Length: 317
Image (cartoon, rainbow, N blue to C red; front, top):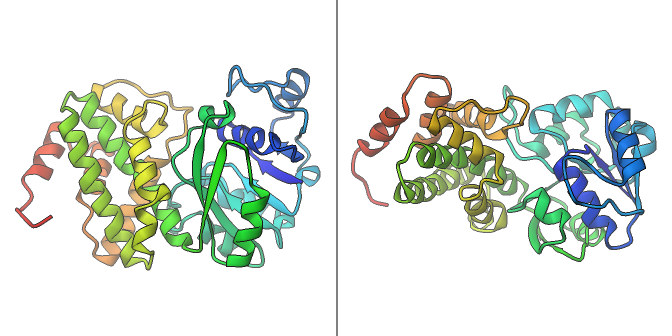
């Protein structure tokens, strides 16, 4: 059995995909009323039109949700508190299904798991994917990063699904950073399109943003090829061009001067600040990330931010 902690759209979609292979899955929701609704209707309002297979069991009892392999489908900034609240997760294989950098510590999901529960086997499942596509059975490819190769091979088999192809790597740092930093660039691209700056501006932000991602990844010891794969370039391409991306939609709202729904989690906003703090500490140049933070904090207007980026000294690519 595989457990999924977090019955949001993405956690539910993963449960659906894994259950399609006749694997028993337990899906945990903190809210008992949400559990009861899913049990009674085999539907989750966060994934309209998707039928939840009979092989999924729903529960709000945390102890009943635990298995040897646990997928952690909670927001990045809530991951640590979940692990601290439930020390019974120790010793299990814990797969982070969130993307971001933790405020304060500047750690990624795998590093947070190691910090709180050092005897667990930490992993991350990341890459270009939207919950609706996964739940509808559309073809998706993801990266599974586990430092231990044997554990990674075993977990890769456990997560097999008819519509998801899982590629394996031992580079957890690169996988973490690719999934986290692309959200910052997606906000920048959304801002550019929302402000009417055009597709050429978006292409420039994606390309130079990718260079920022690579700079930080190299400085932190990641493998360059990881960032050129699904968890880096692949996820960047998807997130910067689709309104299914919450981070891109958030940027669009900023660019248009509209109010964004405050109940929607936007991981890239916190990640931008955490990544910029780390970049300053390590003397890594990340001008697009800095511009996103300045716009978020109200220190720069959008046009001024673009002019600042264009006015940077000429250099080789």
